[in-house]
Length: 150
Image (cartoon, rainbow, N blue to C red):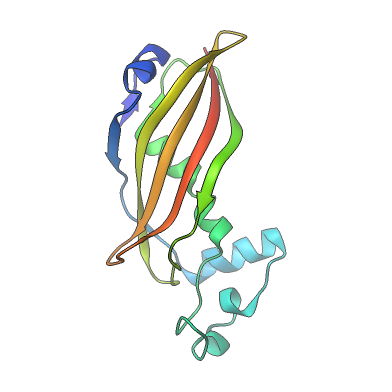
């Protein structure tokens, strides 16, 4: 899905945009994230050791899960006619459940507050929930804040 304009984004404030397709979280993705961030904790990168750990196998980094937000938001809430989009930060981020490697996740997006900013732009809060297939709690909930300029 996408939105045809910033005006359509304003009209979508408070609305649920639905769910993305599924994204597989495999060990290769986790290992590459560990290499990129320097976080090689065994619970993420050592499948043999992790078998006897608290989750029975390796789990994705919380920040890896958070790093999926641009994919999720891009699939559901891309706004046409935007010349520049900037990540402005996050208001709140939580990881209510672990994300076992080998799982599939999908995201749900709700458009929050949309406010004007100088320079012919808007600031938008996207409320994102990332759920694991078969899980009973989300693996990440976050309020992502972006600035979009027409």
